[in-house]
Image (cartoon, rainbow, N blue to C red):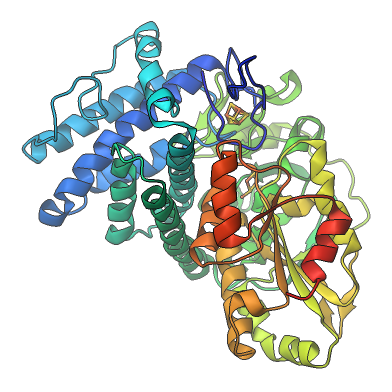
Length: 552
Ligand code: SF4
Ligand code: SF3
């Protein structure tokens, strides 16, 4: 196996200094070599599907089945989503079938008959055979010929597209899609087959991934808002309520809505976990009285927190980690998520989980109510734009920070707690993604009635944060880079890669990225990004704050 798609990749090198990443038998996330290799093969075949989609869409239109498969297939290979090797064996066969159907539909024209390309590879029928084929599908397979810089940019494009696919899949599940998004996705994926070694051209394509992600995040925001209403400022209970309970984690608001419908009138309280927290701000979700609160904290604490939860748990997207024996029997996966031996919810039918909730005692007593406040989406913040602008003009607010993104498990993440704690009292923090769990229980107070910590939502709500920044820039007649605003972005997996590319596509300068830079960015690529975007690697929280606050 070879994987270096997330921040917690092993940073080992051979004696000759060659970067190893997660290799051998298992990655830091627990992904085994078989699953990793099968994921590579799936992504390889998806490039073949994308090729035909892109070539023939102008005359034959977008093949919706292929479009959905591309989104689902890529999403399922994201960090901490699916660890079930068997699932990947069958997805590989599905991918081959789909590719060949698409090829047939379009007359089968391909640039060459070379064997074992994404257009011609015929996957073996057994796992051993597939594993023997997987080597050519590794992201670094051509490193000896094209070099680490080209591989780094190709992987930046691929990993960004994985993140885009996850967001697009959430929108798709809510019934929102656009042909131009599918087409651009197909174009960029098929570009990965190109022999180009032109770094400028590849960087341009990486920024095109960022532009595509902006469109997709906008579509997802539209989907969430039209389906569930505009986010409202909402205090969310973080302490248990006596009674039977189900916990839902991940990003999929559509799944949560289904669960709320199916548990209605059944005397079961529904709790959100991790990235599901912003759900409480949506009127049509919070209208369910049995959506009682948020339980636990960020995904990396799930083994202890799930063990202590007195009911079933449903994981709807990342991040799942190895289920412990104490809760395996009451854990469910849904959508792209998978773990061998863990029950998978089919077609949005949560009845098996509901039965378990009914059979379990639930929380025996209610704890004293504690809350955190969510719901500072685009409309909420822009709704008080005049007060915010006024506070800036009066000097009451001196600076804005966006401290957010994806969270990882390594101790270096305390950087973000320290950073948030040390922000001066006349500054406002916008946050989003699961990185917020490092500080969202702290009391930051308010400035003239404006809370100092504004939770904008899930990681995809980076779109809203960008819109807020643009609106502020408009009000002050300047560019986003001229605002007293600093982007302190934490990244962990591929959705954060997509968001980073969106910020770069908008030419946002001086982003502080951490806790460490992606391993696929070689020193040369980092130098290029520093030169073009003044991208900064995290140092220590105090110095970085001082740097962010120093006059531009
Ligand atoms: Fe390693 Fe991350 Fe890949 Fe898991 S997803 S194998 S931790 S690089
Ligand atoms: Fe977190 Fe896994 Fe990415 Fe939506 S839940 S941000 S890491």
